[in-house]
Length: 102
Image (cartoon, rainbow, N blue to C red; front, top):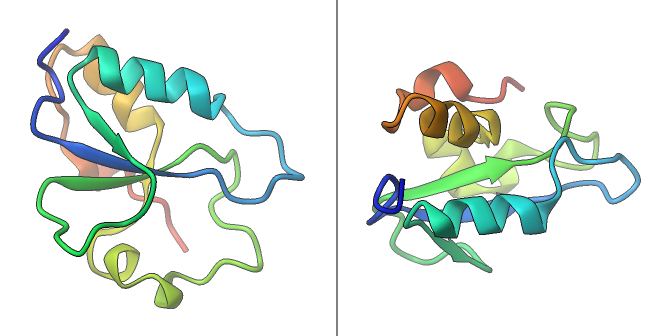
């Protein structure tokens, strides 16, 4: 599991602080790092191998707009479940099945 996400960069959107997350951000960071991923605190200019994750139970809060985030508009916001399912399957799964719908 140590190299599963090697070469991947993750930006975690924790969204609305009033809605409890599906998973704690710190727990997800530990999981990603143990699997070889790198968590970034802001969206870098280069988005090569960058995955934008959400830990919210809801798809998007009302004050979020995918058009405000060029990376999300281009690549989609991916559910944290992709990470957990990829680990369970011992390989990065196809992200298209985990894109959060708007």
